[in-house]
Length: 335
Image (cartoon, rainbow, N blue to C red; front, side):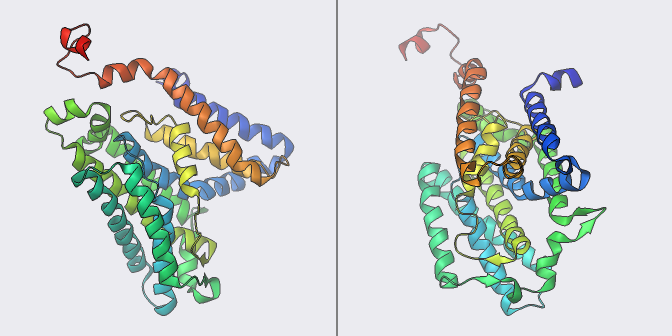
């Protein structure tokens, strides 16, 4: 099992992340300390949760470009609610964030499922709508730390076994996602819906409904991250997480989630997010300007896409072929 993992894509990526981690540690020994390692994971927690939601969407051959706008809108709503009702229980606010995020995600899913609108089109539109709604709701104003309650700001920072609650939420999300995708029929349906939609249809899987569920989960996680983002950074404004959807997609692609759907793992997705997290934390230490971050991410995405296309070419041909049409049949040759 261990040998198989080492030679897998996830294993190789893990070794690359570890090598980067140790290499930076030779420049700054504090970088590889336990406390800083926890800090890096904590910094990457929101990216991990959003990437796991995005993974479901990509598995079904869709894309969600509105995920960061969802974070901004939901974060602004819960911050303003906390501002005007500072005694409101934090778990009520978290449920509110989950509900708003799920609603925004469901809008995307319904358009894709019922109206057959291409996901890139509808999420590009809702991305602008959600950003505009955030501006209209706040009138462009910020909600700052002094306008937030101590409980609102303190929850993600509260430590259990020296690990912040924010990081624990990411860990719980990883465990639930791994179990669902590995052992539940519901989770396996995402692979079948994206890998071979026609075979999934004939086996009784409603591909459109599965895509709806993917957007619903992605939106729900975005809503939760909306609260976590504004509470952790103690500020809510219109441009919160602006452009962050690119890092979310990058984490998925780097982690081996195929952009043609049907291929990808929770472990790979998490490692892809950690790769970005280590790079982001390492850049200032090795003296690279943060302005190069997007360029570096873009280069890594291109390399990852090329690697995915090369390694999965044969798999894709098998997956996309209609099961009732054997290789070399007259029907397949006619197409």
